[in-house]
Image 1 (cartoon, rainbow, N blue to C red):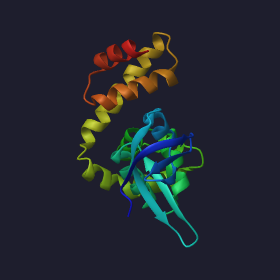
Image 2: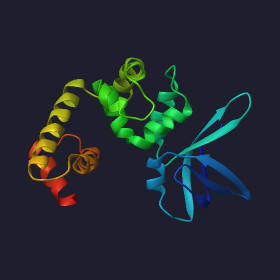
Image 3: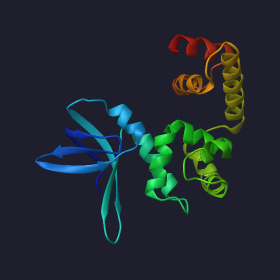
Length: 193
């Protein structure tokens, strides 16, 4: 119903923003991922998803269409509500969620607060084929990419970097260019650490 809002950023919090469009202030629920991307610019465009329930109309906002797409896919899974989907997108980037589902990585999905093993498996079972088809992902390249990522992280640990910090930078590097070799991942990560 409402595809996006283009307006003045009136208030910004980690869980919501208020955007004024033509004199009307919209309360929009956001993820931490969106919070970090919108910055402090005065005028913003935010892509939205309107959830209509019997007792409420709730607006969810996303900095990018890709994040909204993942959110909508997560909502299609039985047992995943809007708050769980938003928590997933606050804990992991949309690319991490997509890749974890596509590669069947239960541990990554289960690392999100409030998601158990059964729910993580259900998310993968319900969405893996859809994600492989929508994003045209080749399963073979995905597994080699994860192997390269793991090798690069191990090497960075040997060099004395904390795995969690290094993993965030490696994920950013791979989000920009997914088909990097282990050496290139390490080089680009070292430039950004």
